[in-house]
Image (cartoon, rainbow, N blue to C red):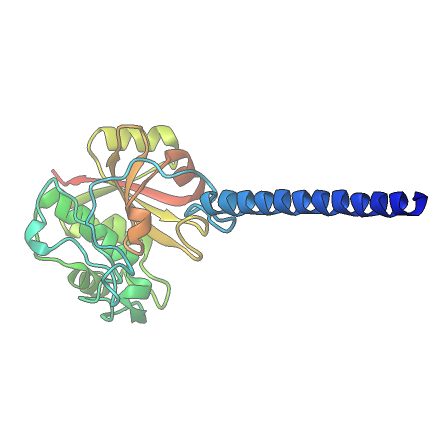
Length: 249
């Protein structure tokens, strides 16, 4: 009799153990399912903003077409029939219309940020649509502002601008100076040191201030950088030279 009782107790203990293991297995399955669900709704660990310097500002009114979105050949600039005084076009040196035009010992897509930047300012201030980036690059070459594989001379923004009927004035690369020029309606061209906008050196245009005080940037080498605004602090910290522009009186 005693032996039978002991055998029953052993079977009962094994049954309890199996029950506990089943419960632990079910709990583990629930935990795994919750972890999978949590990972599905969290952003990817490799996701990163365009730069680490700041979060995107206000998105300006720019063309919808972007690099890699239905335009495998390159970005599309503002159509010429929309170029007008007081409305700065978005012109891209990498636009297939002129990307392969020779300039500065290379091609416009690699060396043409200077003439493309000046072209945007020129159209904005004058409404003259006779120069596209290729035409402005030819102007720069004919007048000695193209360098050998090093883009455009800084003199393109002063003496070169003067030949086009503009006054390009070098101003200090400070937040107060840039804000004053843009608030007065004077567009600005900055030549940037390696950093956020370039790995070597690059001209960008500041059209105006957005409502939040950031700058609306026209970057001829990047639709993405043109589709957001940028803090004046960041721009000033990386600018090597700055010019503001008006129509010559």
